[in-house]
Each structure stands twice: as structure tokens, then as C-alpha cells.
Amino acid sequence: MATGFSVMDALNKNSKAGVDESPRARFRTKDISIFKMYRNKLNFYDLADIEELAGDILMYGLKQNLEVVFEPNEQGEYRIVAGERRWLALKHLVEQGYKDFEIATCKLTTPQDEDEEQVEIIIANAYRTKSLKDVIEEEQRLKACLERIKTDGKKIKGYDLQSGRLRDVIASMLKMSKTKIAQIESVNNNLIPEFREELNNERLTFSAAYELSGMSPEMQQEALAKYKENGELSYTEIKDMKSPQKQEQDAAGQQDTVSDSDTAGQQSSENSMNPPEEKKAGDDYETPHPEGITSICYSCTEYETCNVKTGTCTSCDQYKNRAEAYKTEEQRYNEEQDAIDRETKKKLREQAEEEKMNNLPSDTQENGQKVHHIKLGATFFEEVASGEKTFELRKNDRDYKKGDILEMMEFKDGKNTGRTVRVLVTYILEEFAGLEDGYCIMATSLMKEDAE
Image (tube, rainbow, N blue to C red; front, side, top):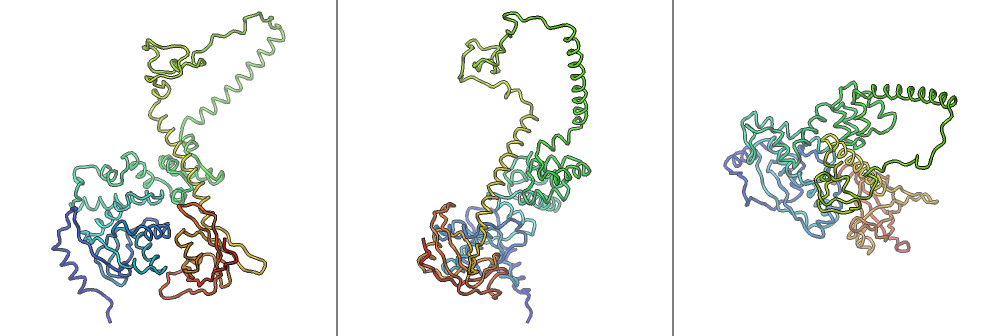
């Protein structure tokens, strides 16, 4: 029997042709089983924290509709345009036994073509916290889609693609500045693949990647060698490498050092021939510099015109820092990028620490049993601790075996409450038709004597 959907596809296309899809406050919705939906190949975003989202939906319900397009094929009937994380969270809840979450109210949409659908997916994810890899890829994809839409003479409501600059449209859609979009384009167009890989894995900051993209491929290869040698490469180091005057400055510095040493030797010789005169009282006195006084008046931009300045002022509502006010745009930009570097390094450290917590090692007891440490949300923890929940659906990335012990740690609002409970794995089901690749279902038995 044929597996195609030619008749349904034809009916679907005919029905779409007569539908007005103009943006409006009201839209068509339909209650659809999550098992009739399938993933969208155009969605390139990272799908993380599914279990945490499932816990939120279990507690508060689904707060936002999924958005789907009716496009039946072998995978299902409805392709997801917006809400893949919500869809996976709902599937997780149903697999955990919460059957009430199988039916979801969805918004029905009919994009004109693949480009418009890609734009919808990107705009739907505009609010998310995204990785650098996702941010760079979404700009690249959005630009390519808009260029094709513009060439075909099509329109997107609210945006002028024909007379306006695409960079301005992209900045508006992604809620970013035009300068930031220009920087991302530079990275997309000029960064060598090796550094692009490091950036995608968040081992290189964006500000450093942007500076590297302004260098020739040869200079980038030199920087890559230095990066591999030291294990890191900061924005400031790259700026120094880009400066054509750096070598001249270094050479000049060496000459100055030689000249200073020669002068010092000459002075030493002269001093030995002419002993220094004895110092008199008051010879050590130096005229005090205004910046050394506590008054903030001396560092204010209005010092010359102010008629109430004093030598002891420590607070003033009209104070404007002279050094800050007279900074060049380049100085401000450098300071901003340094701050971004520091903040990024801090976040990377926090992510690394969190990853260590999320992937706690398995302990092996003397009898050969493995103890797997697992983080669990408060709701699921209570069900396990009470003995109500006697199974676990998990990705088998720790080589779970029958007889292993799962030590559950309760986490609430992202923090460890200190409560733990142990369960014994009594049975494992793998490679079953209904399971995703790499996942397993474990039957568990509560070890009450170890409960805390």
C-alpha cells in the first residue's frame, strides 16, 4: 500500500489557498494530540531543560499555545512551527503517566513557503536565552531567507524589504542593535572554521571572535597557533596582535631601555668624579598635585567655570567625571568588550560548575553495585519518596544495569534541598518500539532504610 499523502496534500493546498492569513488578534485554534505532531527540520535551536519545563507545565499548565501547520506525512499530521520544547515537555509528562497532557490547544498557521516558515520560527524564538551558536546561525538563516523573499518581490507585514536595508530589518526582528548585527555578519563571513568551531562550543568569546574576523586568514592562523599553545585568547590580546605598530613600539621600548642604561652608567661615572652635594632642609619639598587632594572638583568637567568649587568637596549633584566624559569611542568600546569578556568567562565557569553538578559521577560500592546520583524536581521527588512512582524514563548515558542504585536528590527552584532517597533498579527495558534511541525505562523499588 502506498505511504504517500497525495490526495490529502492536494486538499490541504486547496484549503490553504482560500484562507486569509493576515495578522490579527483572533486566530484559528484546534485541540490536537501531541502524537499527531512532528518536529520541524527548520528548527535549529538547542532544545534543553525539557524536564524542568515539564515540571512547570505540570504545576501551572500550558501557558502558551503551540503553533502548527497541517502537513501530513509519514511522521505525523501537523508540523510544529513554534513550541517544540513545550511539545517535548508534554510528551515527557504523558510518558510519566500524566495522560491529561496528551491533547494541546494549537494555533493553526499556513506559511506561504519554507522561507516564511523559517522566519516565523526565528521570530518565535526571539524571546529565548540563546547560545552564541544559535545567535550566529539565526542571523545567517534570517538574512538568507529575507534576501530570497526580497528577490521574489514578496512582502512581510510591518517591514519594508524593497527600499529598506536588510540589516535594519534583521536588527528589528532579532531585537538587536544594527552594530551587533554587523559584527555577527563579519563573524559569519570572515572567521576561519577552526575559530568558528571554538565559538560554537563557547570556548571563545564573541568579542574575541569579532576582532579575529577583522584579521586576514593568515593572521588568524597565527592567532590560532597562540590559542592552542596558551589554551585561551582574550579580546585584548587579539587587539594587540592586530596593531601594526606593536612591533615598532616593542623595538622602540628596547632602544629606550638601552639608552636609559647607558645614561645611568654615564651618570654613575660622573657622580663618582663629582660627589653629590649635601641636601638642605626643604630640598625634598614638591608642589602638591591637585589630583592628590580629596576634592572631586579637580576631576570635574566644570572645574574651570564652577564658582563654588572647594578643595575638600566629596559630593556634588553637578559632578561630571572629566576622564569619563573625554573618553573616545574606541576607549568606550574596548572597555565594553573587556566587560563582556569578564562576564562571559564568569558565565562559562558557572556553566561548567553546573554541568559538573548535572553529571555527577556514579559511585561503585564494594559489592559491585553502582550508585547513580540524579537530580529530581520536587514534584517527582515526592512521588518517588512515597513509593507512588516506581519507574524512571531516562537517557541511558550512564550504562544503567539491573541491581544499580539510583540516589535521587531533591531540587526546588534550582537549589538542592538536601533531601535524598534511594531506589533499586529491578528491571530495564531498552530498544523498545515506543522508546527514542538511547533511552530506557527502569522499574525501581524504594529502599526505605536509606531514605532521608
